[in-house]
Length: 334
Image (cartoon, rainbow, N blue to C red; front, side, top):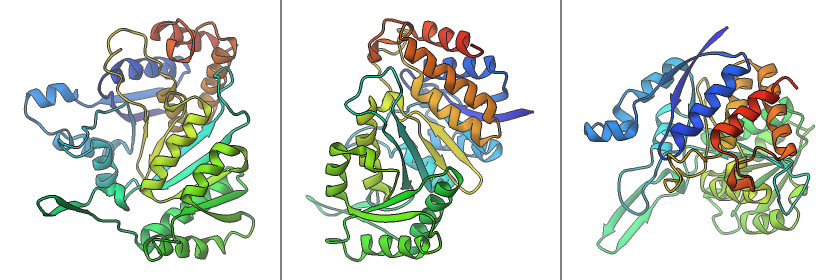
């Protein structure tokens, strides 16, 4: 079966790691008709906004996209494209599996958790305005509809993948109405899943607990901003954003992406690590009905890391992007 997938190569090292992942997927025997979007630099030179370049329509058509990292300006500049795509396509669930990759040095072992983050509202939605000069208001919107939807997604995910426990993360001791509504919505859904243990933690305590003993966590269910912060914190426990995948999922559309930076300082040097995007592509292959190929690639990736001879510089090796990619391909059928 041939699959149609929209490819957003991204900025900086994005095109390099995207090409590497395409090569590995092709070597695994998966037939994909890649539909690449226009390079962001080319669009800007033509004064065309990325979000209005046809990318949203392309993803709606293919219903699945693989996305490299995109630059987001800090404090000034246009809105985040990442947030824009999630809003435009109603990708309400961010799924961030965090697990040790053997061969990558980390402070903890046997970490195996999944963070499920509501993706459409809360402070992270960026609803801001200036009240008067020198005073800015940012709106934290929490709705019962969105909270219930993400809760049901999380509990269904737990059942599907054999997860046993979910922690709802909140600050309802202070934000009694907004985070309180989030918790109330989760509790109603949790009552329908007696086979899954449900617990709650205040966000600051949850952060402390994660760095003290991450092995206590199976799944975490979070609002948008807390989810953004804690998913990066969790990644740091196993080696960083370069070795964890991410998916943004809607009712019938999904984007799988690397969430690390664009690394402009090494762009074009051929030394970027494609692991995070490859791991996201593995999630994508499962999503589009190619679990066998996904398993083969995942096994090959783990073997390359365990062997340790073809790793890129960011994880302690000396290999180039090409050498790492070729090592994964050679290992596919070993």
